Image (cartoon, rainbow, N blue to C red; front, side, top):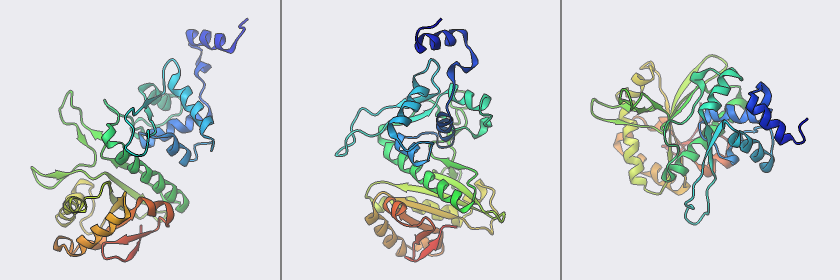
Length: 301
């Protein structure tokens, strides 16, 4: 007879009894969310309505996935505090064992599962990556409310190829402008409506306050749009348009960029395809309403 639950658990693990590493409904939700978003903080999991609104309870559920004999999730901690804001949240991600569990136990197709390759997150990229995922979460929640579908959301930290064998590892969103020139949008996704129509979007998350640098980066988008480089990458009919979604860390920089774009001839014929919001706008305004480069309001779809 086993005197404690710990003794029972240790014995079951040794015997590899199938239900020794049982996964709760909340833990299953966590694994599926990590498969879609690749990296998540605890606050982002709570924003996803993962099954509880209580931080401490969710933390215990995630800690169980992380601390078991064969961890299903990994955790990347950041020891360097963010200037003036204190320590940032840890980011969680799937391990190979977590992916295996999703495929074998939850029957998730392997090609739908995102997990990091090699190193996880560089500290200098933390906020940019977190804000990108924040946007994807808001997008998915909006799509669910509208009964739309977002079949994929590729990011600049999703890769294709293999450096060890083919030495051809590249960002999944990379768009070639010529044989020697390219750019890498922060995201690319499609929205499907119930009537069968669909639209492609490219996404950029702009941190910092250098509006001139941002506009120079936007020139790449204008070039890709004008010469149909994006159309070629995503097999888009040349008669179809797409939108470039621009989200800014600071609303003041959004306004500065719009003013620059309005006076830049490179955007004369493509202004209407760029739509803008700040992080603050995403929290406080309707997701359906976006500002264009002309200063007018436009719907997202």
